[in-house]
Amino acid sequence: MTGNSDFWAYKHAPEKVSDVAGNQEAREAVRKWAFDIQGGKARKPLFIHGPPGSGKTALVRALANEMGWGLVESGGSEIRTAENIERLAGFSSAGLFGKRLLVFDEIDSAFDRGEVAALAKILAEAGGPVVVVANDANLQKLTPIKALCEQVGFKRINAGTVREVVGKIAKSEGVECAFVDKIVENADGDLRAAINDLQATCAGGAPSFSVADRGRKTDVFAALKTVFKTMSFSDAVAAGDSLDIELDTLILWIAENIPAEYEDAAEIAEAMDRVSRADVFKGRVYRRQAFSLLKYARALGLAGVALSKKKTYHKFTPYHYPSALRLLGSTKKSRALFKGISLKMGKATHVGSKEAAKSIPFIGRLRGAAAYFGLTEDEAAALEEIAGARQA
Image (cartoon, rainbow, N blue to C red; front, side, top):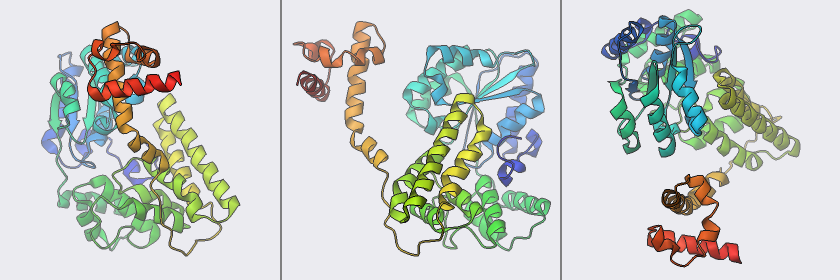
């Protein structure tokens, strides 16, 4: 079992492949893939894709447990250097304690194009079982990955199966829930969301979702309102469960709006301190690959902020878009142009794009540089602007 056992979705995670709810054909295909590898048969890496909450990651973890394989979960930030690519390519080989299953989750959202290219190199060189997982397999950037993998598709879990699992968990926890039908309806085939709703509902005594169809796309402003207005630890922690944004992004929203919501300087200072501590734990997660620490980042970034206030502010607060995200959006074109120039310069001079980027301010002052490197009109204008700023 992986993750925070305080959350029912982790506490009741399947221990074996046969325990995974729904998608029977997909489950059996994955199990056959694993047994073939265990028996010495050559198989390509596995690409599992399907909608959120359909059991993809749960299946991978159950598979590792059932096969007795060590589980190594990695993300895009770990494959940005040649050393890490080589290290991870060897991770899936049999080690001192048997085979290890190397897993890359959420590659459609957590990996940029450069990281996808590095991942493709790992898949091509891996000496043992490797699984990549994504929600959306149709993104163009994932084309190199699909060419190297066998694919298994997952579908949304039917309402009957969701209801059955929710009922079993409620019975196991010794609770009764009058909102099971609404939980199942709003989950829309997302079992994880249904379990989270069950736990939040039982903890709070009333549905944590709006009776109006919430789907899975609760507005981020509703999540902010929950965090800032509640005095309940469990409600605050569950505030982001139904959002389609990552925890990192939600915490950016929270940090931006703390001074707008809280009026007491001590409350603001304490809330900001807890956001910074959440960031420390997120850093440890990625450096140490200790995903169990995510529970602390979540608790500090959501519940920690909620409980930093002495009392609820009964006022309307216009929440603002995070300035950090606004800055990234406003500079997106400039960053894209800079990256394009760096890539073209690096290719022409046989160095990496990062190394080439260091020379942009100087190269841009040379006559004919834009034509030599084959820059577009926009890139040429950007190069001239960068060089002019450097000269000034």
